[in-house]
Image (cartoon, rainbow, N blue to C red; front, side, top):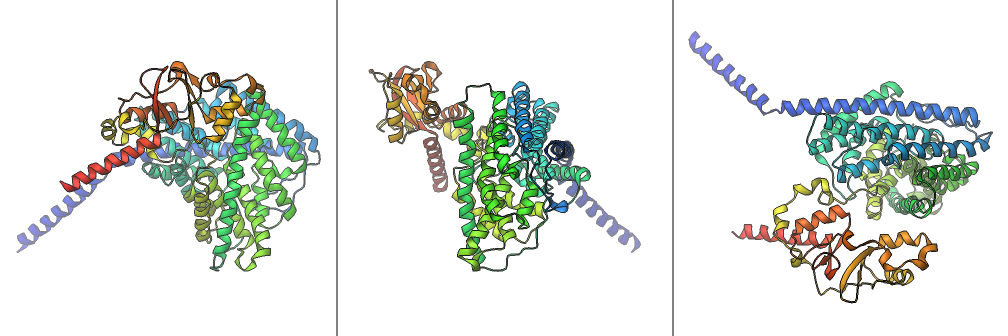
Length: 615
């Protein structure tokens, strides 16, 4: 009997042991340990970068604006205060801002031109088109240039610099360890998450932002989520250990308890969409039609932007810097309505003066301020029309912050989570989701991050993941329509005639075709728009001068397969290519668009699936 009992215990122990061994055998300890270590290292570096940027900006701002210009800046979060006054020596701004802009311009153009602008877009570009390769010097240059830009009073945020710090270190670490391009991409995304989550004390929002910001449609880099969460948490802990654990904003107690207020939030989402479109158009319009055409060296342009900002700040000093203190006052209903009416367009212009001129800084903080002010203005005006549907003032400010950035940056999930984490207010998630969805849907095709692509299939980083064999079985001649009418111009056509033709026709590109029907060059609407900005050359330009001519034209042969066509679309970064009988000059057979290739792919895939089901 005893031996039988012992035998039963032994058998039971063997079963338990086998289950334990099987359980641990199924666990991916290598991947777990590897990503835990890599994401932790990225988080530590990004957290330290966020702390350094915070100290640098606040120290320089105190020196230049408080001690030199004599301003008293409002606090925010746990240190919020309604005590503030404009600079007592405002003329100093006319020195501080232009000089800082010149230094930033020289620093960026000399050592790392890719550090120009708002940073996050440069990382998105690197992920999609540079195999996630970021030069080692970029984070340091970006960090220093952004401290000078924001600390001197430039209207810019901190998300771009810290995103480049984290992403740059992730790229460097992946190269150091000789990891695959896919792993390098995941580490760069984790670096973005660490920078954003650590700086804004929003670890979940930072992780979601990093996987969402790459695409303008509803698509995510889901494989990077877990490394992004780990890196973001570590960066949050590191930065908060040095700079404080409190929320960035101290939000009043507001709740969503009245269903009628959804009508107000719907109206708010529509208003925010319109403001977001204006914001993006002004931001890039200032770059393309004001600063880029200036016939001066690139490094001087941020100084011009600084001078324009200084002149604006003489009248509306609240436009300078990150502006979280002013946003806190707006949330607390402590700024006059007339000032908010002036501050809304002034902040849009100030951000364009600062970043579109070539300054260095992020767009997240200015976007939050513009969205929050828009919400405050909406609450005041809408309450006069429909008081029963108007949400509380502070609720409109908070929802305005999140929904505006959701529309302007195409990150609807991340923006609402980040606002909730930054303010500690989770009671408004329902109206935040609703207004963010409205703003996202109404601003399709408009984004402050111009390097975003619609989805993974549009990203060169993911090109090899799709059904290449399907595309290789299809030829350009199978898709292009040779009977389709193509509007072309003859060589020597004056630019004014080209401009009239381009404004009347709906084509994106225009072939230049000689009398023998051979295409000699081709230009796009972007080429026309660039010339429109310089009217002094209109009279001397002809169609041949626009775009690329001769063998510089990227073209397709009728016998090329669609995989080749897709790669050429990506290489040329265009949506339409000419189909020629041979190298130019050659007879034009038609135009092929990226959309036609994708439609052909979808049809072929559907046919294969139908055949498989019938078999």
